[in-house]
Amino acid sequence: MPQLCHHYKILRQNLNMNRIETGSEWRKWDLHVHTKGTNKNDNFTSPCFDSFCIAMFKKALEKDIKAIGITDYFGICNYKRVKKFVNNLDSSDDFNSQERQNIKKIFILPNVELRMTPVTGSGKLINIHCIFNPDETFLKGLDNDFFNSLENPDGIKMNRDGFICLGKKSDNNLEGDSAYKNGVTEFHLEIGKLIELFNKYTNLRKNTII
Image 1: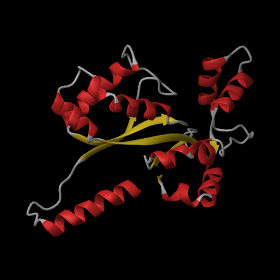
Image 2: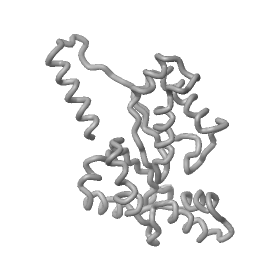
Image 3: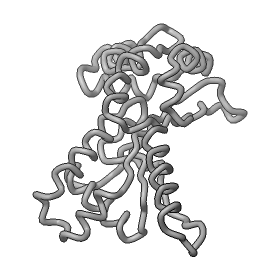
Image 4: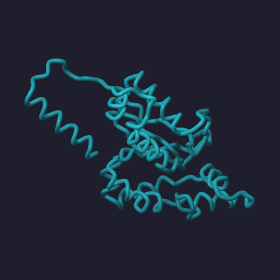
């Protein structure tokens, strides 16, 4: 990804200027972190999203985590909420000055979890993760190039309107968020659709780790 390439270039420049004697340095990454409000199996007990973020970053600092993949099924809304929390850190009294600086250095990536066919031998859908380049310009195009371009076998799009439509198909009494959550539970993709999409959009392919 471009940002990782940028970090690599900086590292090479530093190596050229300063002889480093310590060799390789291993860093802890956690690329599969669901948040409060996740689209499926939200069992978090935090009273609000900010409380969850406080607890998550306290633990990240304790464990010396350098990168976090904010994960959710079929969307990056909670990734954006985490980024907003970090952007507003300076107004938070829950961390001291050094902690705020260390949190801002954590590399945060959007990780979209998809449920795919074919099923496994036990009849379960396969989970595939798409970890996207967090560059804001690239992410602005995801709605059109990714979420609105993928459909389930019945032609229902992988976006909020599609999930609500799917949720109401299985239970016509559902509305709004209830229909949305039900649709997310029911939604799945065929692997061929994902392959077609990445073959079509070169920029998407270059900025995604699957």
